[in-house]
Image (cartoon, rainbow, N blue to C red; front, side, top):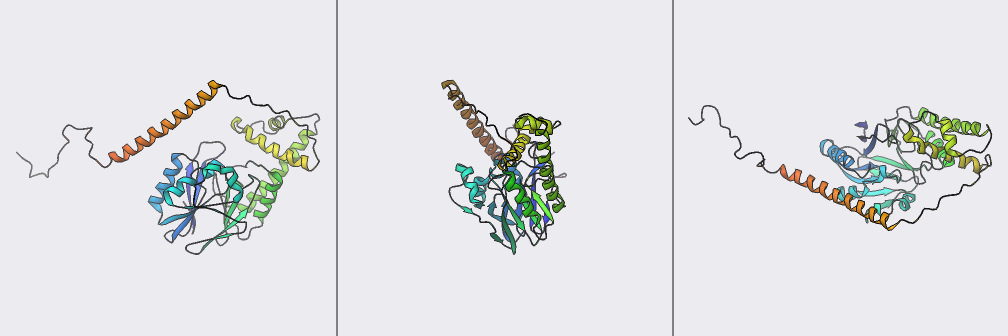
Length: 331
């Protein structure tokens, strides 16, 4: 999907309620002008790789030189190693993402990005790096000011609000994005493109302000409440699969309110997990071995299916049909 002169979107259908409609991998750079930048890479499952490989084969006349990352969550970072191995792309990310990724990064070809840095792509495309923590500690956005295109990862979604780790930082990030010059379109990590970017950013800010008022009103009814009890009162009709995400947002509000001295916190008592039994350790090892064997079989079947395309279908025929031009057939 062509978004702007320098931006294409590879939209991968997604049934996860946390990823409404689809997850998108973006390609940035003039098509046919040499090397391009990808923004995010999807989960480490085949359909993301197939979609990206298929789009590149069918539509692109550029090579992937850089693979950018908006934040460390695995639905955005899962294929970084594959991009390095398959396309020799250099991985570019916030240094704050590294501690979260551990062994998920390739051993070579990884470069840190600095706040305000500009990536110069072939064809004169300039992509600015913006530190926008809040959804996660390492969240960054990419901005092409010349075309007014902002890539937000999960800082702003296309079809819903998002989860927040640090609410104070998140509010500052939203206000910063609202002040960007020439902003025309937001390319989120999930959901539809946003063609009313300033209105949507204002809506996100207003939503968080309203949620804070609702939490304070719920607490004003008296008594001590857990974040889960507050969440159930504020989200009575929420899809049950989203309850923990909603609870995390309530907790983010409560942390900020506590830091501001507006609510009293009574610390809970965490459970101490029991050490695994020998039976549990053995069962975990068995499951991991089964998953690895399944991966091996899937890879073997894919290789066999590809190899089969190179040879005649001898498994279907003792003697295959033959054809000859009419008028020259044997009597």
